[in-house]
Image (cartoon, rainbow, N blue to C red):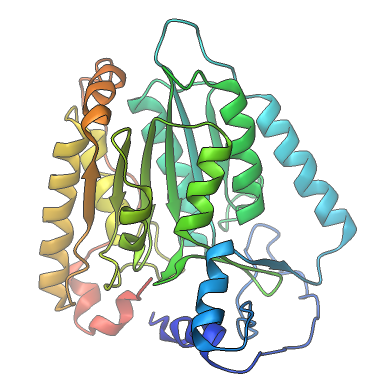
Length: 343
């Protein structure tokens, strides 16, 4: 499934005149667990007179909700409040990992990936009781607070208050479409936004979260590396700043990067750095066989991070778990490469 239309829509965000589709609520899908589709054009979220001003305005991380009922807003707030209240605080004297996974797009592949990523990362980093999933319906369930920029910001703020910044680690996994201005928030025809590198950095700093593992699965996610890199940060991205990543067709269980890193490499008893290398090799092989332009996943692990990563990985499971779901790459699916979809 080619999602070139969303890239074109994002291009219009800061280069074209505002797009103003009608603000109409969608009819409910027959399956209550089926996520809403994208049917309306992505609206213009930029501001300013010149092209440079409009592009710069995305650094603030604009977010828009429209046509959402008060009942839905209340339900989502209750879900988020309940999920945050259930997270255990840190144990003094012990480096604890807090795992957050978020699907920022309503295409169900992202919700499936975020849910399983929480299980894999939670087991790897012994984060039972300190895990949060922000994801919409995936065709089977709708049991979590939905992912959005504001939900993620609130979650990071709360989790920061539970952490000891000198000991504990945030492990954040995001999965969505992306653009060269940041991660794209897109929920059906009601939620839109851009999570820029600057806004994510500000949210982490405001929450006082210093030690962090950031795994960002989206096209162009390499734009986050120069902004967020630090001695206490490990960043893994699905693509270089100028490249797209693949496998995001809505019916998939995994994107290429999610399958290679989360579903395979991080199930192994190896270091994060070695897992990143394993995943990079898998992605490169799949893209070559599918005849795609290489996504070039990025890895940046700070000097201090290498020390505390060894601590929180010391007790990872010593027996690998088996991958789940349909593989992101099946040679039979790529006879016509355009079916793979771009993120």
